[in-house]
Image (tube, rainbow, N blue to C red):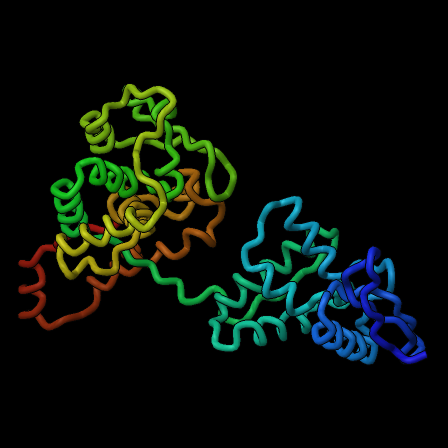
Length: 342
């Protein structure tokens, strides 16, 4: 008997079903659709899957099953629905690299590699791993994007702090903390008063991006800034800062950027992390190993972006290259503005 639609049965099920045999594959399954038009589309989809050999037989795990379990147990539904709509009850075993790449292009035809990776590959990888499938997925070419590393020059940072002080003194203290400790935005926002020991120049960040809690040194400028906190530092059980990650917080930063001048238009909250790392390299003299030892990063790949912000001792050998005598005398009379440490 060929595949056919079976109408809902009053008192038993409100859904249309598909029953019959197609290419030696027997089907007797609910479409989970209460209207005939949608059920007919599902029937056609199942016929296509049978032809391709991707149809899930009764009892065989489907992507829909895995996605539902994933959302139920993790509570994470972000970006899942479009993928579920695309794959539906396709066999879990049929969700391979090619199928995922095709889904990413189909769902986000105008999307960048970063968008497709974030909203398709990463989500499917999480669902498959949750279902016990060890899938080693290749990410879309260019998914890392161009790793741009902007940082503030000291004079730019000082203008930013000054502008923030005039707009909101507590916000200035918050930006000072970000700039001189390298903590991420979420870490700074979640910092509790109880986790800070001003007398020991110490802060304890319990929850970090890499899930490793770490101790953070508070330079004197941060200690002094926290001591003049408008609401004090004796609020046991309270967060240090009143801010939350929302539109108002970003509007506040935009106001500060506007007041500080057009040359800091690139500023984001993460720029302060880059600034701290860059300053630690240029003025603190830390190399890649030193940056990792701060506990802010785990490996050299993460800190490699900061190697170009200093001049190496080897490159300084350029002072030994031959030049005309007149130019040599002029060069001797000029002094370098800054000594970078490799």
